[in-house]
Image 1 (cartoon, rainbow, N blue to C red):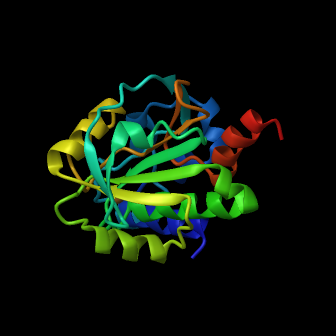
Image 2: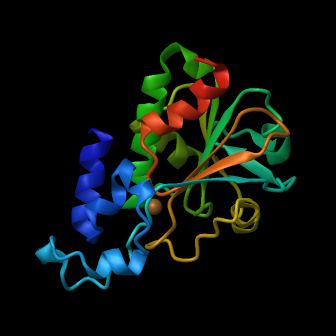
Amino acid sequence: MNWRFRLTMMIFTIGVSPALLSTTSASHNHSQETSASHDHSQTTSASHDHSHAIAPVKRTVVAPRIPAVTLVRDDGTKVDFSEELRDPRPIYLNFIFTSCTTVCPVMSQIFSALQDRLGADRAKVRMISISIDPEYDTPPRLTAYARQFGADDQWHFYTGTTDTSLAVQRAFDLVIRDKMNHPVASFYRGAPGQPWVRIDGFASPEQLEAEYRSMAGG
Ligand SMILES: [Cu+2]
């Protein structure tokens, strides 16, 4: 399934204004509340409280302090997360949970499309998806999920304990309190020690690819 189609389906399901999701909407500055309350285009979801409204795509530069916590990769390997992030390759990172039926499948579809766009260059980057539901997301569940999205060798999924997952979420200032209504963001850093780019909202695969291409000079 194409990520745009999936996103459209999700928008329809949870009643988010499509205007908020276009890549050009980054230049508009409607507040979330204003846009959501003026969205009368989806009459079937009129009874919704719009609590799922998703902010427009916004790019900022952040400097998370990476905690030295132990996480478990989908292949069962225990890793020191801060060590994992010392990889010299550029890194894409997001947060997901495998039982999510709204936001996470779209984000994973976008990472999958990003992987396709990178083509052979995918081996020059790393992609990291961290579970925010580590109790449920065991390595075998993550492996099945990875397969579902065609994750290649450069893309791994991580679980751990509630505490270690929370420590990483806090470091990236993306604490997900309510699994049914969680924020959407992806992260990118070019090399160890460099700041991270934080993209709030649904960044398109093209936008994510551009972070790598602009750095690689091509
Ligand atoms: Cu989700």
